[in-house]
Image 1 (spheres, rainbow, N blue to C red):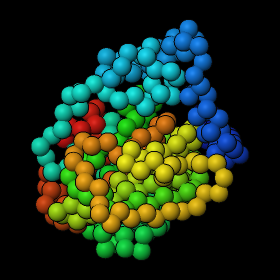
Image 2 (cartoon, rainbow, N blue to C red):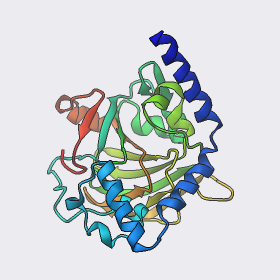
Image 3 (spheres, rainbow, N blue to C red):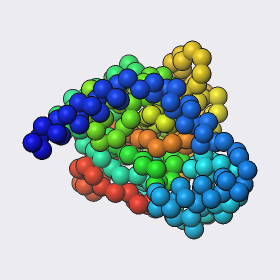
Length: 287
């Protein structure tokens, strides 16, 4: 009886998720979240939103009643010093839960148990094997409770950004287990950072209700735009210098970051890493 109910529930979820107009729904949610209504309505709504998701108001840069909308509160900055940067070579890019972490030995990354996806399809980069084959990847899932700005995990030089339009499937546990190649079909933005150990990739993966992926250093690249969605590959000949902890961008709602580390990083640090799923990262910038 229980198995039959569970099977029926999963089938219903599959049908509903597939037929939902995910892109239009995401834009609508984005507009509602960023609606700047009267303060007597918006500010209690922000406080209720924070209470529901157990968001720590004391960590926010400003008081909750200084934000003009739930959306602006959602992408709040934190008070200075709340996330001290560790002295390690690399740090975590975001408040999140690490759902997968493993080596990239055959050009395959793990999505979930029994589900994988290809590095080349994920990055759309013909040089991806040269950069990351033999390295490591880590998948970070951001839920609504989390602080939603993404920071550079390393010191280096931003040399290129790749925008890859795609679907906006949810990135929750059900979707990762049931949607083939989820991260390779969803919209994403890949930021490449040159370091002394090779190229580090920071991949923002879009999802349902992610109004936009926004880059702090280049606002011309923005996810889930209206109109034609054309892949972009943008290079920065002079490079953009970043330090660990510098802000790279933000999700307008919850989603996923996939980190790609080169082989030299693996060779140097693998013994110090505890690779495996489901590790909670309670602070964005502490090792």
